Length: 74
Image (cartoon, rainbow, N blue to C red; front, top):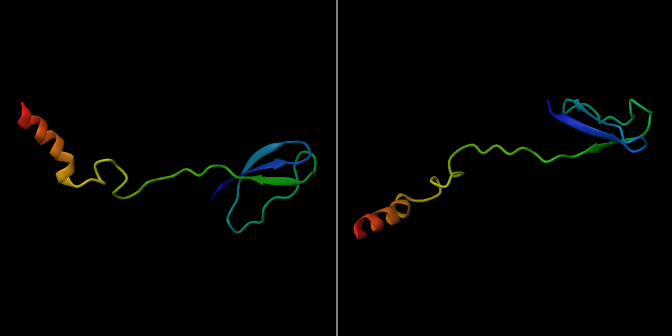
């Protein structure tokens, strides 16, 4: 279940709560009874699969060509 951050428009009280996707958003501040506003945070990104690393996106010929050229010059 996701964690949501709320902030009160009246008293600036901020808190986090774990809610299901099916639950309605909170609207009343537990501290003062004022109006709540849902705050949006940046989302953590998880890269899965191939193609996200430097060596995954290159072909075998381009990654070994500079090494072969430097060894041939020696």
